[in-house]
Length: 234
Ligand SMILES: Nc1ncnc2c1ncn2[C@@H]1O[C@H](COP(=O)(O)OP(=O)(O)O)[C@@H](O)[C@H]1O
Ligand SMILES: [Mg+2]
Image (cartoon, rainbow, N blue to C red; front, side):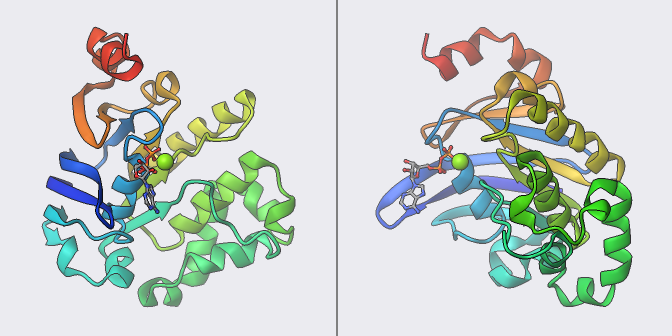
């Protein structure tokens, strides 16, 4: 479904990703783990078109993402839940969801998509008139995910959905992944919460200092000495 080959990217003269190659197959949940500053968020921004790579290839279902204008990448079926959620705190939950249905195709189907999202996350329907900023951290993450699902993506990019949440809420957020996948959406998730994410994905890549340092089945990475060495530096 998604294929990256030899992707390099950065900020000005600073290179954050070095020849990153990875693949996500339809129906999978794939994790990208790695320490702070590894380039995980940069990778997500590259896939969703916020940053243009300086080298490499990127395709979604065989379509060249790099030949697609950034504002049309959502129409390729990719939606991005950014780090720190970026909701509009003084707007209601429902108005935040509306902001996610901005692609022309999605706009026409707005009511239908809203119904789908409320079906998946009944809590959002209950809270639809509440200001997003007044909800709990876990509910805000649910709202951010719901907003991304408004564009009817086939691939959802989740950037550290558990960041800043209390442990009990983190469990709930990881449980949302099951709901998303049951709706037929493929998931690429970035996490620092290694133990937990490796329990909900099939495969994962370890990114360190902008390079893929390990890749494999989640179970192998979970107890792999290679992971401990590369991730913890011990
Ligand atoms: N907007 C930016 N401008 C310049 N450098 C950045 C910017 N965002 C991230 N970086 C740098 O790129 C590297 C990778 O950052 P990031 O992708 O955010 O890592 P991660 O998400 O794994 O913590 C870091 O060295 C970071 O300082
Ligand atoms: Mg990050």
